[in-house]
Length: 246
Image (tube, rainbow, N blue to C red):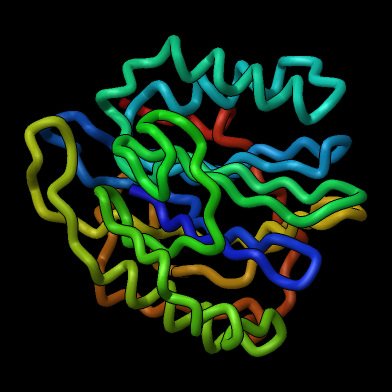
């Protein structure tokens, strides 16, 4: 139920994620439970983990990663692999988890967790990616959407607006019973830039009419940050404290 777009650029990696967390209970299925940042960052490693999906194991995974005292990227990668082996992997789809890493020396690396063999990598192992653009919950991804990175401009917002509106309008069967068919992307869109010099996050736009307890309206207007009046600086909660309700 998450927008998760990522691509490598010259010297960095950009992640675009939404913030809406939806309820899964039968009567409340598809309604907004809370809003939370779905990217966990490791600034001292120049790495970030972005997640999507509705399974309750995702917050617990990020909690475990955030509490771990990884000193090197190798320790982080090994720790992530060990924790993935303890999870109910059948609940994952491709790609629910993406890892961005930009070492101080070397090339930017983008990885995705796949529930099936892809690019010569076995299922349930991190596969190297150049870019990924997907549409909410499910197995949707487009490795060949290479034209969008060249259109992205943080100061303009037109590409983000088109991407956010297009992906929100892809309706999905939601919850364990696979109904009703709902919009699964909402709240705001957060851009996370991972580079060799650090990690920067900022809100690049939002759906102002989204509310906790209400379903997401597919036709709601997305407003890029540049078009809005200046407001008090946003304080993004992490997904671990965002109040995920299963």
